[in-house]
Amino acid sequence: SSALPVDPVNNPNQAVIDKLQEMANLYRNSNDKWRAYGYQKAISTLKKCHKPATTYEEIRMLPGIGSRLAEKIVEIMETGSMIKLEEYQTDADIAVMDLFGQIWGIGPAQAKRWVDLGYRTLDDLRTKARLTHNQMIGLKYYSEFLERIPREEVSQIESVVREAAASLRTGLLIQTCGSYRRGKATCGDCDILITHRDGVSHEHLLFPLVDKLKATNFLVDDLVYTDKHDEEPGAHMRYFGVCKLPGENTLSRRIDIIIVPYSEHACALLYFTGSMLFNRSMRQLADENNMYLSQHRLHVGVIRMGKNKVNEGRLVPTPTEESIFQYLKLPYRPPAERDY
Ligand code: DCP
Ligand code: MG
Ligand code: MN
Image 1 (cartoon, rainbow, N blue to C red):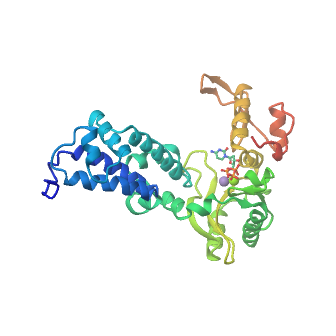
Image 2: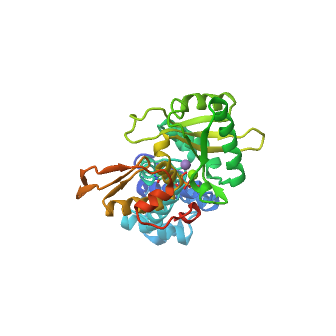
Image 3: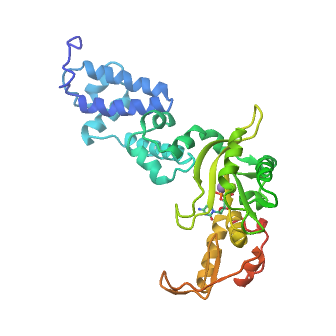
């Protein structure tokens, strides 16, 4: 009778129970408590059952198992798996990958790695995963970083940086680039480019500027912070981090600050204004015309063998963005028309 104790290790229906439990967990985690309850009832019935369930009719006779569930149990017995479960798992995994992929700095590969490790929620990541510093910051500001920043707020952020910079040096040239310069109504972050026309006063500015902005609690967390050119070849002096305007209802925002020598200003401005796809096509056009365009400089007369440069060509002066367009024989495009 069903009152007899059943050996939990050698339960004749253990394989079926395991599959049903997976399904029950999935439904519970997706807040379908009613379905989870149905599966849980069937599981406890099977746990008390001390002989293997074999036919549909037999299973249907067990208390708490309706026709739909009985069909599923037969499917598991016959195939060893359950299509619904496999499907559900795939869909659920994709949803989790989407969730993880929305964390700042997380791409599809990292999202998949976490899913494969069994993490399903942001809390799983917070409590169980081994996170890098930047991943922790991304999680900490998960929902805030998903909020777009109104233009008006971007310009307020720019003002704070401008004021702090002006108190350190005079004559600095400060421009907010990225989607802001392209005229977007809202921006993902605030991209600030700093240089100085005298060609030297941009030097040794990043550390004191960041210090100053931290002292007033404007900068609240760091992501990338380097005052060295050699840390990553070709990298700008840059600070990527998190800022927050004073006030009770302000959100934490992503801020990128790049400081460049004046000779590189136009190339940096073009690069930092984007869009990313626009940059890619400009570089490709340069390649096709024996030139080389980067965030630092433009070279002409480059000779390539396949992907390798046989001759570096000649660095040309690029006083303005317009001059870069001219070298590429392109009509000038204002920032608002670089948005693709
Ligand atoms: N950029 C690039 N390649 C990258 C990253 C950035 O060419 N991998 C350039 C083009 C971008 C600019 O830097 O327009 C600024 O980068 P953002 O990531 O801040 O992008 P946007 O400002 O264009 O958009 P968003 O509003 O999302 O910040
Ligand atoms: Mg931006
Ligand atoms: Mn940016």
